[in-house]
Length: 112
Length: 115
Image (cartoon, rainbow over all chains, first blue to last red; front, side, top):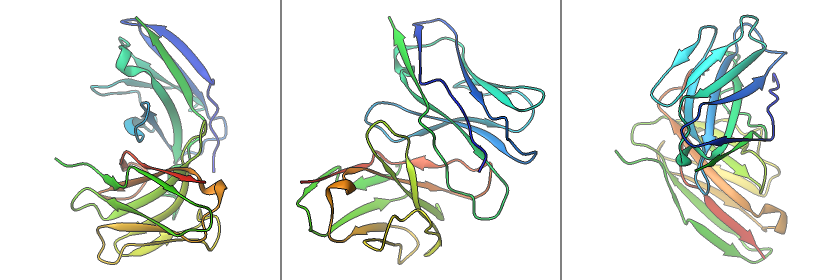
């Protein structure tokens, strides 16, 4: 399985934009990039996913490098509720890989 | 609508005992997953059901762990002869379809403590 690398932790102030990086230099052409986040004492929740093009939804934006070896999750205006561990996960079209393979993620702290 | 629910929310047991953890997926979701999360780590895959059958049980750590989903809805994770190393949060997730673009919806987890 292709591996992702994320910083252990990041900090932000409330209402500022946050850019969470993820490196995936061994990504294959059919791997999708997914982001999940886990708020304290909760299960993970889906944030966004993409393949090649940048993606936007109500929660965040996903910017994917042209060579697809890295991506950035963008929270446009951080709130205290965005404090969580953010996981970048690659998902393949290969048979029997419906499981999510989590790393240790990036712990985002948001200060008022 | 109702999300994924897991019971109990907390379970404390003694070493050597048997435990059952229950997961109620979102209604209509055919795929169901179990993960285990140790402190400070990301969730780790255990087993995946498509309908009633286990499509991938490669993450079960040993034969003390077993899971069932007899009617394709509720699932039970069973752990025999519990060990202190089994202490973790056990997470269940479900999805309406499978593949590289599906979204998995997680429950709040069951915190298992083995004394």
